[in-house]
Length: 498
Image (tube, rainbow, N blue to C red):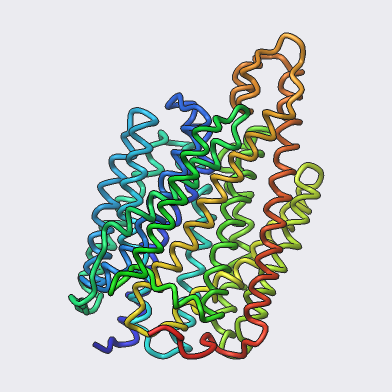
């Protein structure tokens, strides 16, 4: 069904609103986390799981939901996802305990996993002209960046006037409007009942991801449990192996590994993952550092990291418009290289110059905006329409996996470095090593403890930013090698898979 131009762009607005909700909930707790920890009495591990439950479950379910969307229709999947997301938002808003909130965040992820591949798949089947589709996907990718940046700002604004549950309750009116608009604007479902959805594959992927995250978190503890780490690593490895083995045997796999033979497709997947690792990592640790060390309000900390989005907006929009002329190489690899420069500026100036710090955030955002705006085009442009759901799922998994690893690895690394390096003054309780939040709560008027804890946290921030910088640089090198023979356009060659 060919839609009119007006209806196509209105539909893009609706699916982008769905994406905005999904990405907002990835980052909306970064600035709110200190408040949540205090109000719910959560410990540092529960605090990280309140954030991580969402990307872990979503990443585990995304591959299956994309294929399920191919089978039942992406319009129907989008509507189901919106409904689940709305109900889960209500449950999260009124959670009485950390455990309840973690479960509600996992339920939110189920709705997000149903929605997210459908947003991109609907764009793929609605915009048939490649240049028009590149612009539409650039808008989509830009909103992913905007949503990540708006999360801390919106939570800061809400926390100034309302209780912490408002950061979830704000989703509900958007869900209602998007449901009505989708029913009116979206084309009829083009379901393909020959496609088969394999629940065991989704569960195996989830086991692999949970095992990986648990191993990372436990390894970063001051006193890790070797047995627990071994079990988590074994579960992750067995889950991953069993998932891959099952896909090769299924006539309709959730993931056809042959699609990764296309270098442009693989470069797009890597670019999405590396970019979201950088966005999530920089936002998480920077909002925490400036609230806990510098005394920023959640809103002020959110506005600070919004510089990433401000830098990303112009390059993200320009990337989709010029992709057909310049090709993927300068936008993907060049964008990641530029963001590496910005990351170095952040690393060197976070505690000395606010001006240079903001400049670093802007440059980092500019580079990531260019890379992210065309990563989706590289992925979607290198598979046929009948693989749109699978390709969309792979792309969303790469985004969520980047965020997931950033929070799990960098959050745990920051806690571990802080605990290992803090020089407690005489008489200070040893529990001040647990986290900066704990040290500040125990300090009272003890300025020596506050200073020692803040210095240790700054050392941890510096260490984590080194890791972020190295990862972005590695992404620039890897995508540059993959795209070295790529010319103008979003598609390198006909897909090599059947």
